[in-house]
Each structure stands twice: as structure tokens, then as C-alpha cells.
Length: 436
Image 1 (cartoon, helix red, strand yellow):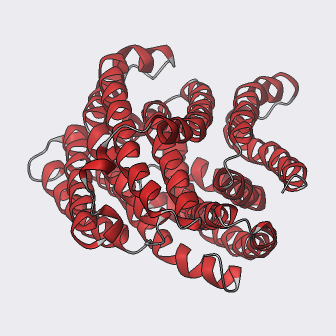
Image 2 (cartoon, rainbow, N blue to C red):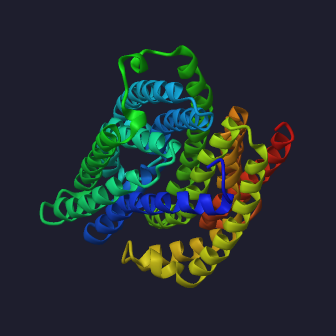
């Protein structure tokens, strides 16, 4: 990624990741649609109530994986093969330890945390069951995240896609089997997701070892390297902290959602699942930019990083307009795919129309985040997380205090949080690029 037209490289690299991310979201969509349609809105709400909490425990693993990937991309851009291989192994050690710790912590804390955020009593048992099974799978999910982040750092965004697509198909088949004929409810949905992620992770890692020359490791590459590990942690820990703070903020918002009852929880779950798809094109460009910025930062080509930023913002603006029109026209129909309850469909459809006005802010966050993370700007991740915590926890209090908007505070908070975060991201980018 250190030569050629940036926007062409980014699109070529991002498209396989976009397809992969869409299929990864199909895991959640399959759970939600199958459970919501076959079991009911209560079961859908139970799954949705766990989203922010499980994300909180997954955040450390995701951050460490991203930190290791950025270090690999920087060494790769600098042409240092030996340190690329050592970074691959040392990143694996980080991922293994962090995933085991967080998986165990999440399993035992599930009931307490879900109770703490006032999960409605009628959905609490199913929510605890779903979260515990999901947390058992944290190390399995970490294997896929590790393998895919390493391969993407080396410029291969296609291999993770192939295994993810296969796993998605398996997940849907298992969902239909476990939730349908076997009548396993939310337990079956969680189990199907865990088994599918295990297949994706194991397949991706084994294929990388057999085919990618950077995974052909010798004894010296397996030795613990304090400097490389520290560098990966130096980048990965702030990213973990950022994701953790985002998770804490969404958990705070989930508490507000829960206070409006099961119908609001189900509607918010449906809109969140749909907007996870909205995140995908922006997120894929952001992931591509992280690799792009990391390689060009390692190659000492700051002018290419600036060009990549401006061209990506144009792409984000175009995508925002298309997604806005889609939600304005078809938002309610999208929600109706999850549930049959008219109240839930009406709430969710209007919520999507509201938040779609803020999609450009969402795109701005992903683009600046990709650039800053790729360059190893650790302070950015930390401050950005704080902004999201303050916004998601503080805005509902202010909006409910001064405006009589009721349940709509949920979706106003989401959109205004994106806007506040986008403003900070742009300010940080403008300040940071002056030092390049």
C-alpha cells in the first residue's frame, strides 16, 4: 500500500473486508431474526440486552489484536521480515492471555452485570444464558480476530473472508436446527454462534500457517520479545481502553433503554442490528486505512496518508447519502424482518429515520480512527473513548431533564454521540498531522 492511487488501493482492500464484516454481522442477524420470529420479541430483547455487556468483555481482546496488527503492518511497511515474524508470535501470546482472562471474568460476572443495568425481569434468565455461552466462546472468537488481523496487516484481506462466509452459512443452519426443531431457544442461538466462530478461527489460522510465508516461523521467532510486546501493548491497550469505554457508554445507554420496558429493548435491539450493517462500509474503509496508514508510516510517506484521508472522506460522504435514503424509505420494513409486534416495528422504524441524519458523523469517526490507529496515536484512542462515555451517559440525562422526548432519547443520544465524537476526531487529526 505504499505505492499507487490511495483510493483505488483502499477500495480494493476494503471490499473483501466489507463482505467479511457483512457476513460476520449475519451471525447476529441470524440469531436475532430466527429467535425473534420463532420464539418472540421477549427472546429478541434478551439477546439485545447482552450486546453492550459482552462487547465490554470482548473489547480488550479486540484492542490487543488490533495493536498487534498495527505493529506487524509497520514492520511490514519498513521491510523488516524478522520483526514481522516475531510480532506475529508475540501478538498471539497477548491474544491468548487476554482472551482467557476476559472470557472467564465475563462468564462469572454475567448475572451480576445484567442485574446491575436493570435488565427487565421477564427477559433476565434468557439474557444470562445467552451471555454465558457467548463468553465461553471468547477465546475461540479471539483466534479468528488474531488470524484475520495478522493477515490484513500483511495485505491479505481475502483469506479471512473465505472462512467467515463458510462459518456464516454453518451458523445459520445451526440456528435453524437448534432454535427450530430442537427448541433450544436463546441457548441454541448462542451455541450456534460459538461453534461457527470456532470453525472460522481454526480454518483461517491453519490456512495462514500453510500458505503465508510470514507464518513459516522458526524457533527464534517464538522467543518472547519485550520490545515488540511492549509496542503492541502500547498501541493495543489504549485501543482496548477505547473499546471498553465505548462498551461502558453503550451499557449506560442500555440502562436507559431498559427503563422503557421490553418493547423498547426489542426495538433498540432491532435497530442496533440494522445499524451494525450501516457501520460495515465505514468500518471496512477504516480498517483498510489502518493498514494503509501503518504501512506508509513505516515507509515514511506522510503525504500518502494525507491523500488517503481526503479521498476516504469523499467516499464516506457518498456512502452516507445512500444509507440515509435507504433508512428513510425502508427503515420500518427492515425492523419488521425481526419481529411481528406492531409497537416494536413502529418504534424501531422511526428510530432508524432519526439516527440516519448522523451517518456522515459515523463515517468521519471510522476514517479518522483508522488513520490515527495506523500511525500509533495512542492518546487518540483514549480521549475518543472518554468523549463517547461522556456523551452516551450524559446526553440522556440532559435530554430527559430539559426536553420531553420520552423513549426517543435512545436514538437522539446515539446520533448526537456520533456527532460529538466526529468533531473530536477531526480536531485530533488536524492537530496530529502537523507533526508528520
